[in-house]
Length: 203
Image (cartoon, rainbow, N blue to C red; front, side, top):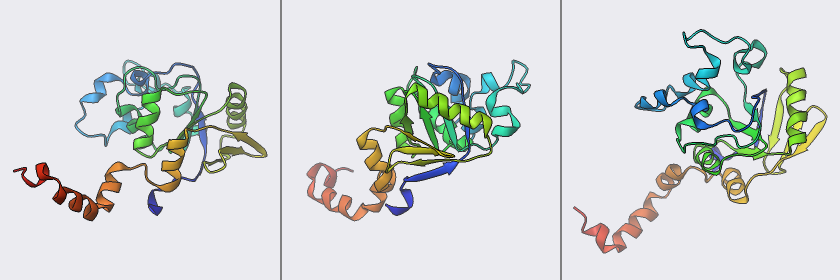
């Protein structure tokens, strides 16, 4: 599906320091009471972006003026561990993040990201450090993620990244969105339904 393809993503990045950043830090549990995901972006990393009185913590990366409106997060090991809440990738996406580059990701978190069209790709600790250093020195310079070649370009640096083949295929073909696939194939679904007695007789 052409409009859903994710092949090239270009934009600025923000490094988020630390390993084992869990889903409760990404989106604190008290915000899960929201009825929809629409406001999730407002609460991304809330407890490290704001203090107990809801005052902004000015030196947190996402609050720094040079890192406003980023396209990428650059993260460490085991990002997205903890509970399997889908609110965490939703908060990331609704904040404006289109992809996450890290050393490693919790498997369920990576799957939840794929389900909403947010690629997560991995690189070595050395390459993540190189990217973070480049972004810190050049915060206004865009990175380019090419999923087809599995590379991230940062200035004259080209870093190899990894992504599971199944996820890569879904992003490149535009088939990551299960709901869109169902809607695009309603005729075939109806035909199958007409052949299934338990669907035909369902009141």
